[in-house]
Amino acid sequence: MDSTAKITIENLNLRIGKQHILKDISTQIPEKQITVILGPSGCGKTTLLKSLNRLIDLYPDVKVDGKIILHGEDILHTDTDITTIRKRMGLLSQRPYPLPMNIFNNVAYGLRISGRKNRRFLRKRVQYYLELVNLWDEVKDRLYDPASSLSIGQQQRLCLARGLSVDPDIILADEPTSALDPISSEVVEKKFIDLKKQYTVVVVTHSLQQARRIADYAIFMYLGEIIEQGPASEFFSNPREELTRSYIKGLFN
Amino acid sequence: MKKTTVRKAEELFFRVIMFLATTLILFALCLIIYSILKHGLPAVSWEMLTQVPKGGFYFGKEGGILNAILGSLYLALGASIMAFIIGLPVALFINIHLFKYRKLVISIRFLLDVMWGIPSIVYGAFGFTVMVYFGMRSSLFAGMFTVTLFIIPIMIRAIDEVMKTVPLGLLESSLSLGSTKSEIAYRVYFRQCISGITTAVLLSFGRAIGDAASVLFTTGYTDNLPTSLSQPTATLPLAIFFQLSSPIAEVKERAYASAVILTVIILAISLLSRVSARRYQKHKIK
Image 1 (cartoon, one colour):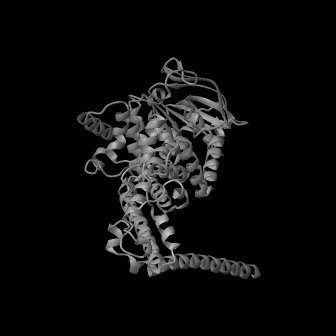
Image 2 (image 1 turned 180 degrees about the horizontal axis):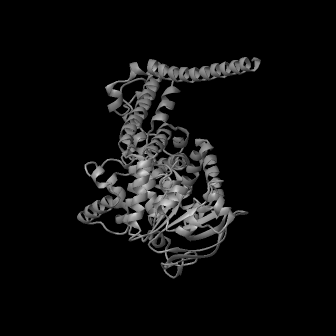
Image 3 (image 1 turned 90 degrees about the vertical axis):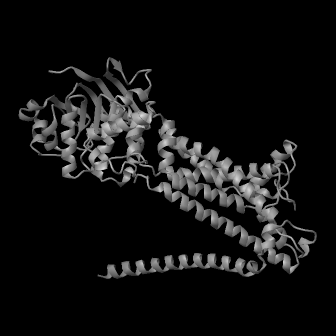
């Protein structure tokens, strides 16, 4: 691997009730690159992503063992406050969920819960993050309108800005463009490529084309297992496994 | 071919039933309103709204029911505020903090539904027992306490039903920002559900102001204006009850007039809260 590992996952197993959802997952997610997790629906890729920021804590009957190491700390077994861990990772979900408040406060929310209350500071930072996701020009005259009045594509970018506002170093994205129109999708994809200069990006997708466009490192999952992983160039041009090959050819989905 | 005819007949049958049921309900409602207006409206007067009962009021002489109007408003307001202060955190707690413990939440909901179903006279009897235990007299406070108990399950379940509809993604997104659960409760869920919460408070207020059985033993009755939490207080439902049981026609008419006043109060509060809820509704995430 030509870059240091940001997150190391060792022998991660996850069961919900009797179902074995993630089977012995071990991988290293490279720093400041885009890692794409690929695979057909129901293969556990979203669960893997949600394990990274421990959103799986929300679900009943979940049993996890193994390690997820971030900055030398196993975040599955740690005394560090979960909110601190989550602040290091921004999440972009399938469908944007802005907060039930106006556009300005959506971005300011993250700053406020981090204890920043100075109004001038908030204004400057909100503008900074909205510019970062190319949304400022579209919303600068309507900052105090409800976030729900934006289009879905704009909402997704707002959610990205909101996620960045808590100053994470990792961005987790769960099929972030599946609900968006092609133009908004392109904006989001391009943004990811920009953002990898500063952030480690992990994207779950079932779109092969998208994976080819943005991936630096690819992980292919099938039925809860990692079948193959590697740098994207090798992964797409010369897959080692038969299953990967047929998936890339589009033989199944 | 034949099957289609049967299905069409079935469709028609159910439509007729639904239509009849709807008509029946609307008819009953109109009839209730018509009868209280018909009997009560002629007796509603400025005097009735602004005066306390004078000597001979219960024999059809002058005076009004300001004591009961104010008493009921105080009682319902106090009880709604107390039930809200207790109920909102409970609803937030079971929807956010206990999210993971589905079975526990299901049991809590079941318990609350059972409590919702307990007749108010039972709450009245319980309130009375507590009152006697502490050596209290029937008073505005004892009434508020009992009515609070009685409307808490309604308040919690009504808020809870609204919070159940908050999308999971909103909870996940808020958690991902590193919010604590309490921040999510009061900054996200509260705002997302504000209109539903308003409706819940209104529903509870309506139950509180309209219930006679829970205040029968606990609040007492008096012709004086309520001035202290420790004094007995008149309430509208009891004012209706006492006047309606009188053999004198004028007094009976005033019972209907009291019912008109009670209905108008509930209607006014309903409209007011709906208007104010609409202001916050615009931020709701669908």
